[in-house]
Length: 360
Ligand SMILES: [Zn+2]
Image 1: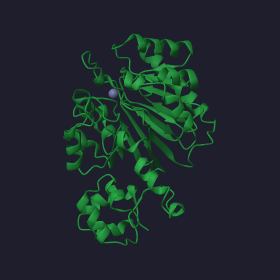
Image 2: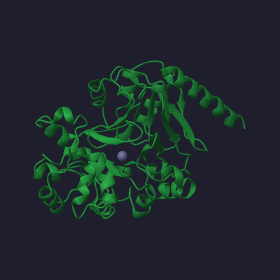
Image 3: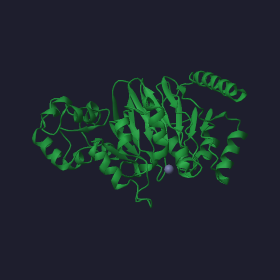
Image 4: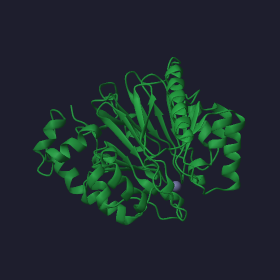
């Protein structure tokens, strides 16, 4: 009882703290848009969220200190919420430097007993800097990052044998746009989520693949529930783990879910005004748009179907070679909906392609 009320006060305090911190404006934030960047940190995860009000959350910090210059390059000057999804160093390796450089307002991590000397040192640092630390509780908790809501999943039963299954699950919601962040959760933890809180997992716009696209991080049941319009996976180039697993890639293809991956696409930036969303930056798109004459008409830097060549179109998630050739044959398109003239593009596919393409 004492523990429960303690948590209640901690969360109330946290809510007030975040609201109060919302007064601070970050001049580099988008206007009326949430921006979610899946940072290219090599083999690991680091996801930067900016609310329309300029509040910032960092979910995981990659394997090393290279995260700090990456954040600085993106104009980050403060962090309101820092999250360690679980106690593996490809997720918290850079967090000590983040704490030293930005002193996050709140630190959220699981209270799993799995630990290491390095992780204990991070906790010590968080304590020394007097940063309020919270963990998932028995029920779902909503954290307000400005007008963006981050729901922390309830704590799943502890798995003493597999730390991946102690991942903190998060759902980001901004209007109709959502991102599901399941850490490295493997089958047992995802099953528990599916059974106990399906609505928190269902119908997310973007799914970060659990466990870097390994086959333990994704299965058909999960995809049927989440039904993402886009999958994103974070992993190192030519990583020794074989991520992403061919089985995961085949599964995504079967469900017609496009995939962006940091090993090939670099940092992936997605933005949304709560009604629409688009991929605003990744390696293929940004290198193309520096050359595109229609840059001013195409500010969100999506693939331009009336101008992109075959190679550029093929680099777009969900575009196979046959589809690309048919699309080129049907040019010009009046608008994105006009893509429906291509035989393979039905309404379902069109709704998935809409955020990724421009045809004007
Ligand atoms: Zn990992």
